[in-house]
Length: 323
Image 1 (cartoon, rainbow, N blue to C red):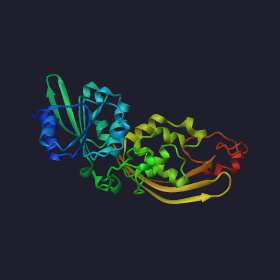
Image 2 (image 1 turned 45 degrees about the vertical axis):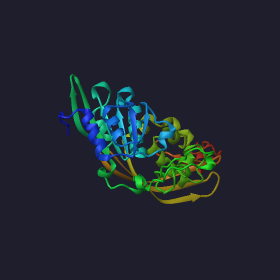
Image 3 (image 1 turned 90 degrees about the vertical axis):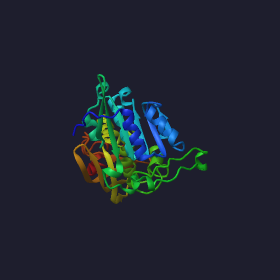
Image 4 (image 1 turned 30 degrees about the vertical axis):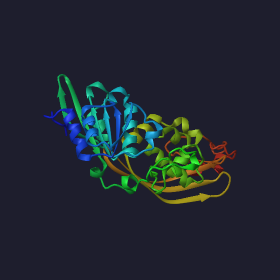
């Protein structure tokens, strides 16, 4: 549905939005200040406002949770892939509510791009030749919220002595374990090897939620990595609202190298609706690391050729039955 031209000004609309939600923790992306925010801060001096320039969130902000994220004069200064990654990450990990004020004519975005991220067109504002559009996202109104995305289930911010006094992520891990991200999939995202195939499966799901394309490529069987479409992976990650993961079973087979099957169901929402996908994925361990064997990437190996996983065995006696 196309939003009509509003009788309000953009500042009036933003002021009403701030007054409606009265965020205690506010993330502002793009503009460093604007009149509606200044008035709100004067009326609510206890509100914590964090400001970031257009682009990827700094690590200190990416680890935090906010009541509201305002994106103003931001997307106009980013490429579309950068903007998709930014908004997708904020929606999945940083804020339950988002408001984006954007000049569509000044960037490469269309209404449908916001709809694919589950944002709705609220109002349009005419200022001389310029038209601004306000898009909003409210997770609580959008769907029944799984616990791992509900702000009241997120841990309070604390400092960990084990990390040298650096603040730990306060995010609950998206994989559904109930653990903090840093103590769960974030540990593997930082470079530590997953101890089993099921842990790697969970960490890969979390990587889709977080937009970690490099990790998804690196944890795929090395012989298949060149055949992966990095842009497609990044777009799917950013344009999907990830709704949850259920790991049903993990079957580990002995031998060298070790193989495993992990059966899981992943749910997500995109521009075409809500989806559920059940899969029995194959994994192989080599040199102390587990790898996902991607059934969509063609491999060229004869039955008597050396196996692509690097085990030194013949393909027919190693990974052939797992592809």
